[in-house]
Each structure stands twice: as structure tokens, then as C-alpha cells.
Image 1: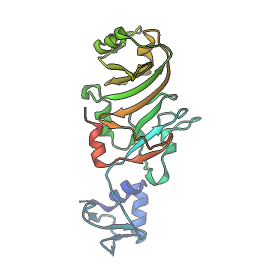
Image 2 (image 1 turned 30 degrees about the vertical axis):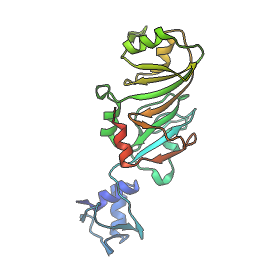
Image 3 (image 1 turned 90 degrees about the horizontal axis):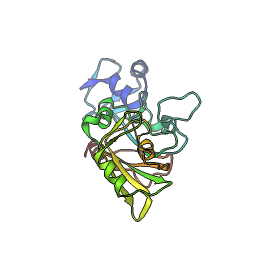
Image 4 (image 1 turned 45 degrees about the horizontal axis):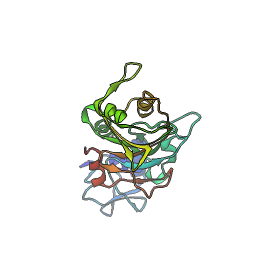
Length: 236
């Protein structure tokens, strides 16, 4: 059971004050009965809640898979740049949405947008060992020595320690590689390849945890995750 104003605020992405105003003016019904008491408590899993005649679909948190395009920054706000949250459709927007982790401005692919700080922490914490999978297009081919170095881990020129990761060619193309990391350092994939004199020309994140990017999502498109898909995010 939760207060009605909290339920409405969370589901509609409005402030608690705005939710209370809707309740006071008689715009909310619970199981068909109008409720004007802002302290009223309801069970969002059992009761039927309607706001201005429209049924309220309540979830405590929201999880959005986006296929991030180039040129968009991984942030909730940006003075002179389009952000990933700017691309979220109005019907999915909530007040506290943020990207769980960052992709470089010119990196594309799977980014999670949510209002669930705890889940984001679990995905991003190196201690949790949640894998992120990338496809990198390179200017030079990889070889067995580089694959072994990725597997063993190494230190970059600035002293940053890259943990063990997995690297393999995509098919027979040695200039296209799949990289699986559990870390998330700044420009990490690009810096790792650069240590071996290889420049990353294109980079796409295709998987977080055990959940792959939906191939039907065009660049810039997004969709809500199912409960089962949310669980896959924290699977190794």
C-alpha cells in the first residue's frame, strides 16, 4: 500500500504537489470511486486507479532500451547538445530519468535509460562483473597476441589498469572485433586498442548483461523493457 499521490507522481512523471492537486480537484478514482483525500493509500497491484478517466498503469521504476545514435550525449541534460533523454518519447518520460552509464558521443548502440538508481549501480559497479559487449570496427587487424593481452589484462600509459576482457574477431574479418568488458573507464575500448597502435573507427554496444540490443530498433528509437528483460541486465 502506498499513498495515492506517490503512486500518481511515479506513474505520470509529475511532482507530488501536482499529483495532490489532481486528487483534490476530484480527478482520481480508485476502483470507480472518486478520492479527494491526498493521504489515501492504495494497492497499485490490485486497485484500479484512473486519472481523468484514464487507467493508470503503475510501475515503481521504468526501464528503457535505446539504440543511441551518433552525436547524442549520454546525459540527462546538455546546454548545447542533444541528450539521450531528449529522445525519449513523451509517454515514457519521468522526472528523474537518467542514462545508466555512458557511451561516447560518437559511440552507438544499447544504452539503458531509467529512474532506478539501485539497478544502475548494480550494472555499473565493477564489483558486480556485469558484462558489456561491443562491436568495434578497426583500422588494422587484431592478432593472437592482442587477444591474449586483452584476456590477461594490462596497464595503459597513464597507469589505468584494464581488467581481463574477451576479444575475438567477428567472423573472418580481423578488422571487426567483439569486445566484452566488465569495466567502464573513460574511452576504455578506444584506449585499449590504441595501446596496440589500432584506431577504433566505429564502436557499438550490442549487449548489457545477458540482454542484447533489440535489432528492430532503428537509430534513436527506444522501447520499454519487460520484467524478464530487466532481470537479464544483471545476469552474467
